[in-house]
Length: 428
Ligand SMILES: *Cc1c(COP(=O)(O)O)cnc(C)c1O
Image 1 (tube, rainbow, N blue to C red):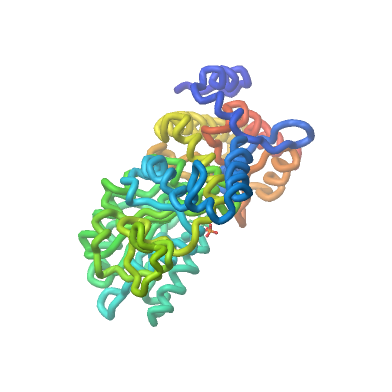
Image 2: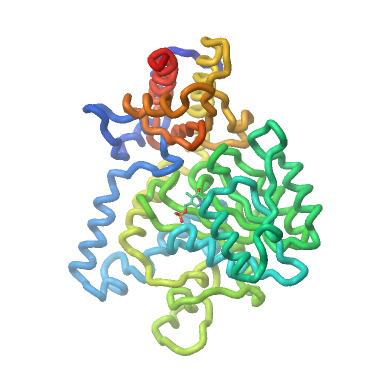
């Protein structure tokens, strides 16, 4: 597409946008009486208007049925999560029985590592992306320590090449091959939170399996953002949070994926709780844990129905919009336009003042663009905030902006870029 650096062009794209009606389904925070330009869906997605109604309905069930709400009413809580398995499976490219929702993300990462990281003296290493999200780093380090290994030796990090910001797929695959004899697990994010790079999950999973290791992904920044095919790629396990691109509220419920090839895998140990007990037998309360088949066998605790109600409101919107492909199509255009606008600024000043570190090839990025600010990064970011743009800042000099197809407009992208441009003269 040939872009133009004008408000009219941005407004024309908005007028043609098939998904434009969906912005009205969300509550947009306000700044001095106007909608903010919210470019932070990579951190916390906005609230669907329907959330209060969905939560209100469950509060009503609680009011009306008390404990009987687990079995009675039009949404028996015992089965409530089941309603979300099919639409969630569609979002992550899985079979419904391969997914479930429970706990929060880092907790689920630990629970899945209990099953999929069972090191022995020969195979005990985990290969990860250098610069993984801190919570994942801590989870991995503590798991390695828990098994009596030293993270310095047992965790292999793959870093970008000298002078580069993103990882080279070939380098990831050859690091797996090089360590094949010692690898227990390859664990990556689907999208790196800092650079916005989408990893080649299919190739990573294939190469990990050839090396005799399991392969899992943390999809916090990928779920609801880019198309995924976890089942077809043969990924062993995955987990994600729902509060970023899935708009399911601060600290919202997390999702997990376990490939069906592991449903009968007796080698996998797990930390069990009654909510993972085999179908229909949970309330017999007998001794000896028998897991439910499918991802549900990893559930531990009683369903947090109110969090699930928020999630359901958000997931229903993914169905209403007609699937992730529709969102992805608009997302590619929005992010492409943002990239063009950054380039316009650089051209105007004859200098790369904003260096985009997210991959240029749209296949390998989602909504987010990360830019390194050459000058006064924090001040530039604060200028945006003062003028009603919500993005996010990462030390020492990176701004991340993520136009989200559900609720952002091309005009948002245009106006945010104009403010960035303005900041350069305003701050001198
Ligand atoms: C957002 C994010 C988290 C956050 O984990 P919580 O347990 O929800 O706090 C973890 N890992 C990655 C990769 C993330 O992007």
